[in-house]
Image 1 (spheres, rainbow, N blue to C red):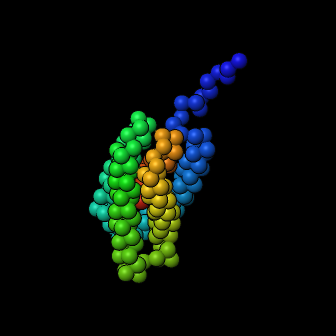
Image 2: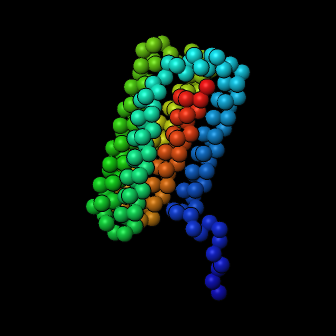
Length: 183
């Protein structure tokens, strides 16, 4: 007797990677909801603080992560079809773009610090540094993960790693407009 297919059978990757992804999305979502609630109490202060950010750099970082996600997906597809050299190249390129993202983010953090801006400056910056810093930690973890996967890109492991990387992309695509653009 065989089991009937379940609703989760078509998810790419293992169930546990989805438990991780959903839990991470809930943490980021909660942080963004609190950010929006606090912004509602001081829209002018948040707008003034927001003007200190590097919107162009953040926009470039958005394009970098989207491109990186595309390369990671190509890497997963190549791993799935047994094309290890193509999988390896795409995963390394995706990780490399993640490193560039981190360099741009570090530059913005440094510039803000040079202006004397910290988590204590204004509630906006408390949330900015917490949310984007937590995201940067996920980018770093994803870069390491993609690098490790590029050594021996097996289909299942690569699919799980790329699912995590797409979560990192998704979070940034939400953080970018909320923190940098929405007034």
